[in-house]
Length: 108
Image 1 (cartoon, helix red, strand yellow):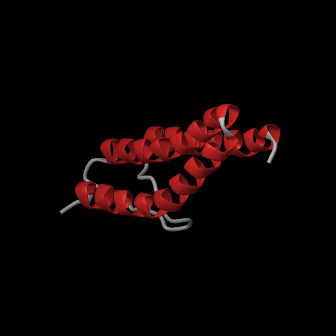
Image 2 (tube, one colour; image 1 turned 60 degrees about the vertical axis):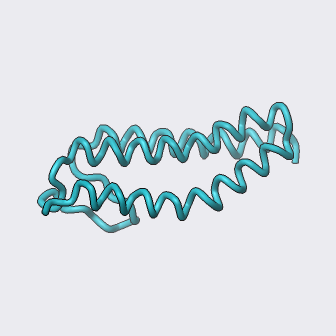
């Protein structure tokens, strides 16, 4: 894979997850995790802290793609491994981290 194609893949994905993280962080209503599943305001005790934790989670996930883009300039194979491992491990990790966030800020 050429470097240009690699950067055209990793940078937009990194931008997407970075923007998603910033959006989650600044959102006034509780951020959702699953598509179409809304989190009710009355279920969350501290909405700003809950959203901040969600934003940090998504920003951390975006780091995989930013690292892959930078690493791709130096070593394309290593970048591919980082992104592959980061996404394969990162997706289930996102679910686990979100469950922890939700249980921490869930109104008792």
